[in-house]
Length: 417
Image (cartoon, rainbow, N blue to C red):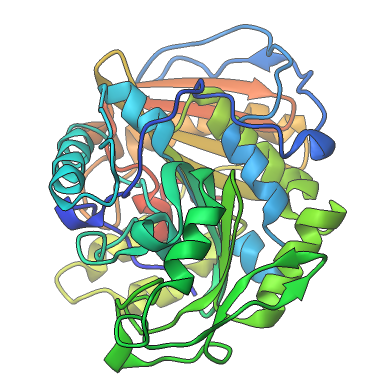
């Protein structure tokens, strides 16, 4: 199930502090599962609506978004939907100072307001799951007071509800979390907690698998908008959350054994690596490519006043540019020198298709319309840069503020034959 497009308002932002590490770095917990460095040659697309770029890709260590994949189990649902956010990059890009005490309401509100101002300037698409503090409940949820939050840097949420997997990375105080959870009275924390163990790791469990208690929604220590406490493991560098016990056991097994993660799926790893290399503030990753034959549902669901535009976008006339097939795609927002960007990563079966799409995507931006607005894509893009790195095509859309919204909403910018 695809999540709805998330618009980040004042109450939808992260309740966490700023990192003291670089945007491409982050702790040592993944040292044993690092991927191989990139060694491919770059080429460029022909000039179309924007600029050209050239150069050789330099081998680099895995970035924070790629590293998060090591905690997410590889399933059909997680390959289809991964939502990622790099709040450290977002804060640094806009010079935001975090609250000294994330649990202080006044400091928290000032921090949320600063994040909201930054997001209004840039591209949309920085989103995450409930455990990150990101969502429409940030101003009322109190998880940062009970789970030892000191700083949140990145977040990833993968899968389809209710079988979702979330990993939040930053700094946490598990001893403080244990004190807060143990000291919470039944009156304040209505769902009793247990502490099961898997893979030698202790985690918190509230209620039965996927159990919803609407009367207990958004109550401490970690109940979400449907009153689900779920299962949570917290240590000094990360927090893991699922809604059911099998999911937590699977997540812990992936982490402790180093096997069965999305990071071991080359297409997914390459997509996240591309976002890291471009400095994206987050992204949406999926194998749900925009195949020309898959638009029937979007056409049928379109309101009458937009149906013609949607049908024209999914069924273009003869001669209109269509991309070569690709196997995986990611898109996310970024910010460079005071200008918003949308980044797109296309992973292909081979380098020939990637080379072909460098030119074709530039043409699609110049010649085709958005199904949602009916307007040319070029009207929302100030410039286009493309670079081919083996079978990966990296695209930078200068001035484009739509981020991954077009992927989540199935607007066929990347329509392929």
